[in-house]
Image 1: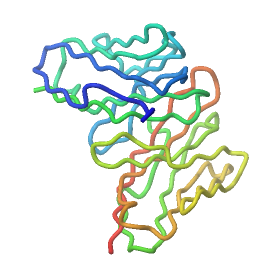
Image 2: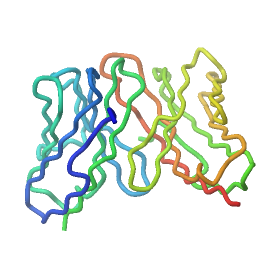
Image 3: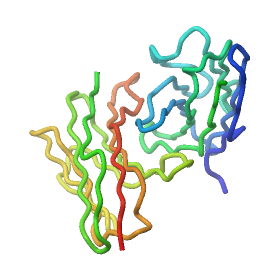
Image 4: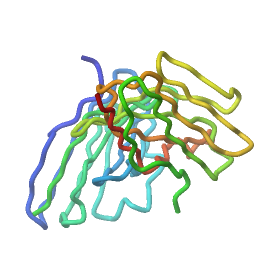
Length: 112
Length: 114
C-alpha cells in the first residue's frame, strides 16, 4: 500500500507532556498538510509544506505546536505541554499538484 | 467564520434510494470542490471533485451538481447501499499560492437502511 501513513495511530498522554506524531506522504507528493478533527466536526487546517518549506500556518497552531518536514519527505508534528483541549484526531494529507489531497488514517490523541 | 455550510446534519435513506447532501460557500476565490467519505476511526477518503467550469460531474453512483451563480454544490448518491453509510464532508479550496488548504463543511452522517 503506497498511501499516506501516520504513526502512532493512537496516543494517550497526561496533561503537560510533549507528544510527536509522524506522517509519511505518498511518494513524490511535494505538498503535505496537517489538519485537526474533533468529534462531529470537519477537519480544520493547521499547516502545510511545499517540499521542506512551511508555507502557511493557521491561527489554530499555537506556540505549543511545531511542525517540520526535513528533506521534504516525512513530517513531524509536535505538541508541547499538552492540554485537554488538544484531544483530537490529527490528520495528515499529501498532494502533488495542490489539488486532490489524500489523507492518512490519522493519529487519535487523548490527553488525560 | 464558517465558509462552507453543509446540510443536512444527518440523513436516513432506504436501500436503493437517492441520498442528497447540499453545500454552500461564500468565498468566490474557491475553485475546487471535493467530497470526502469518512468511516468511523478512519481518515477522509476522496470521493469525487468538481471545478466551477462544469455544472455536473458523475462517477459511478456519485454525482456532483454545481451552481456557480448560487455558490452551491451538492452530492447525489444514486441507488444508495448500506455500505455507503458513513459521514460525508464537502470541502472547498482556492487557487492562489497560500490558498492551498481545504475548508470543510461540518459533515453529514448518512445511514442507509435495508
